[in-house]
Amino acid sequence: MLQKLIIRNYAIIDQLELLPDQHLNTVTGETGAGKSIILGALSLILGDRADTAVLTNKQDKCVVEAYFDVKDNEAFKDALQEESLDYEKECIIRREIGTNGKSRAFINDTPVNLAVLNRLTSLLVDLQQQFGHLALKEDHFQLDVVDAIAGNASPRAEYTQLYGRYKKINHELSEYQKQQASFQKESDYKQFLLDELLQAGFKENEIELAEQQLKQMSHAERIIGVLQGTRNILEEGEQPIVNELKRISQQLQSIADVMPLMPALLQRISATHAELKDIAAELEDMEGKVSIDQELMLQLQDRVDIGYKLLKKHGVQATNSLLELQKNLEQELNATLDLNDTIERLNKEQEIIYNELLASADKLSEKRKKAAPQIKNKVNELLALVGMPNAKFEIVLTKQEPGITGTDDVQFLLDANKSGQFLPLAKAASGGEMSRIMLCIKSLTAQAMHMPTLIFDEVDTGISGEAARQVGILLRELSQYHQLICITHQPQVAARGTRHFYVYKEEGKDERITTKIKVLKQDERVLAIARMIGGEKPSDAAINNARELVIS
Image (cartoon, rainbow, N blue to C red; front, side, top):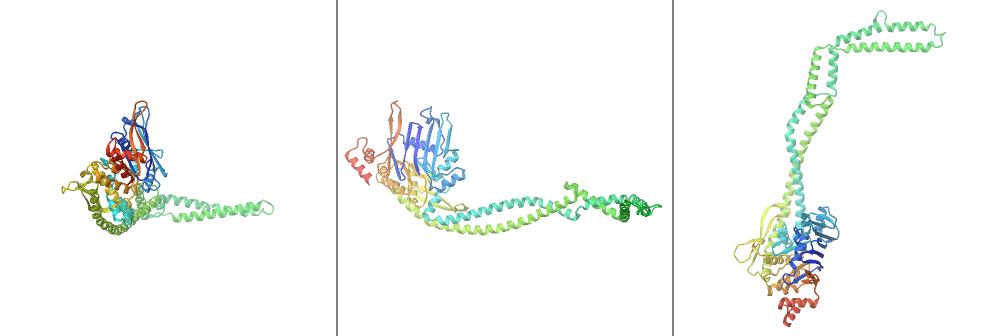
């Protein structure tokens, strides 16, 4: 709800403050007094483009500031969160036009661009001007109207939840299918690489061990010669070291009883003797393991060749790296199989939810089909009352693929002059007619739909008498549930306001003409409405008529 509007230095407005109440605020004044200028300033808050031509005082900036009570506006709260803006129960929206022509917009003192401003303020104000109707531009307004009358709040919430699940599964399925397509391109090659590694069948460190063994076998004769020669020196030569150490030990033993330090030395010689015997035994064992088997050498060379080829192919340095690669390939190919299972599962889930979605959409459609004729008939009745007796309103529902609102596309059509040709509202109705049509439609949904502050710019253009009275009644009834601001030239409409604003021009001391606005008291209202009936100097009859209108 709009609590306060402040306009400074805009066109012929020097300083102006509007404090509407929460019901029907009527705005009257002479033609050219500045009512449309006030709407122009308000349009800046709604995201319209700015023009420095509106700066009356070129030395000062233009400021338009609106205060809104948004504590019950959940849609606005959610939109703020989506834009990462702070939420407060009172939202202050400000638009400035600098002397340099640059325009800035703020929501709760946070700068925003015009796209964000337009999106957010559309949830706060619906400006019904002669040549533009925000509600009709909204994606779901016409459908929302039908659902409000049909009582579809609960079924639509159920459908929306199902649709959210359906879209989520679709997204997951799409992502997995992309992965599957990507994996599929590489899986054949990966399988080939894996088969090659499996066929090679290497064990841990096998290439390195085979390479070492080949080196030994290629030098087998020299190795055996060295091993045998060394063992001969230790045990089998003319004077083997092992035997000499034994003889030395026996000689030293003979003087051990007279040499106190000898036992320790003999112990060391004994240990050395034992160690050399052990070394000789190991040399003999190593000699027995050195092979010169040509067939085995060919086998080992073949394994090394295969190994080197695979190492080079995969750009690694060791057998264990090939085994790690083999493990990774197995995991990736297994993941592809798991991915296929996941896609199959999601396809089944998708089918189940899609069927539930269609069933839920059918429930919505049935209620919409029942409500559409009721809405059509009621709107046609109201159109006759508000001065459009020749107009025929129609609602067309067409089937479409499941979307966020169901499987129905709803379109409001109008035949303005019994031509037999129904066209979309925006093409079939004039500006004034459109405002009255929107008034009729919104009056039907007053209790069922949340609506922003509704501003009607001369909704009563081209009508008078009973039609104007009916427009006033509809506006007053609608204002029991929503805040309305209505600019009017009809006394029957002005008299229905719960707060009456009067716009006028005033000449200042500097002889400048500025637009002013004031709230009329009861006697001032009667006089203003009497002037709308009987001219600048109304008769007693006009004043009495005005008093009756205001009282009623």
